[in-house]
Length: 461
Image (cartoon, rainbow, N blue to C red; front, side, top):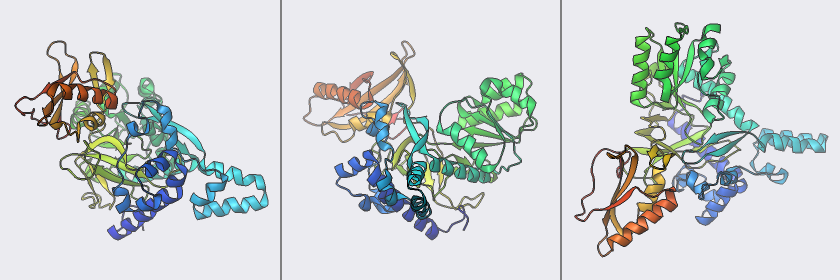
């Protein structure tokens, strides 16, 4: 059965098997972070090694792994399997190969173990803080295999020639694009943003990759420079574009007299696999995922728990990867839905993430102390469930005085609590959780809190 046309029963069975292998045979025994976390939760790997079990596991993010802001804490995510433990997590063919070689040449067993378990590549991830994500050789093989699938979803072939205008950075997005082209057999040129116009003059590119944040501006610059763009039939927006970013690019393309298909590709923070929109939908049905390589779920963005209503935070579990291990990882992306329904455009029966707002929970704010990314999940964690607070709102806004961004915390104090003491305690706890003091803590004497549209139900902006 093809990876993208499985029945619900087949998908369920594949997911159950994938989760069990990942948790019981790899993550549980060999990841220091997850071993300690499961112990602290009073759980065993076997108790969470199913779809039902893992859904009960509290979602975690970068602040859980690096609570003091030190990126060195991310090392505990990496599977650390030695020669003695290799047999516990290796798949059958790899294990037979290793044992067979051990009989022929004792030193070769270690080489096989290291090839399968030793990280060989690192990329940077993180939003409020930066930390490395490790990949083994077998992980990179999976990324390339997923990339070949991505080409199918995007409607590309090995005849397509790709030019990337992305910065030459050590990120999962840049690495994933390179391995996707390799896996699909397509030529890829990644000259860096300043040399894209020259590269377009050398080859007749059919695919142009642009950063979603600067896509319209980059396209206008290329057109102004006289770069030949008429051969481009597909523009890939890297990084789940917001509606206004996609609209601005379409307008720039029309102004240049071009009408390529515009599709999005995206790697959620911490992940290593590229998701993409199907060509048949022209981007209307969401990002398509890989059910045998990952488990994609959604949680309440304020609590990290299942339940709640409205927009949800995307969380994911990687399957079959043995570098940095992610279980129920909070990506910081919001989505309208994660659906298993077949895509109405391409009919693929893979989970789709619809209405993604990349990094919405960790926006960059231009505060008076300088620009910085603020983890709104950490702010919410300092406010949710407090016995001294009846309700709360976080309001992101801009100061009328100097134009600086502000983070205001509005509180409805619980009956019997002293408002001044609560305000001081809340400010302290927000600083501990998110690394910054609120611009102001506002007490709602009449119990009325701000209303309006926002990032989440109680975070307004």
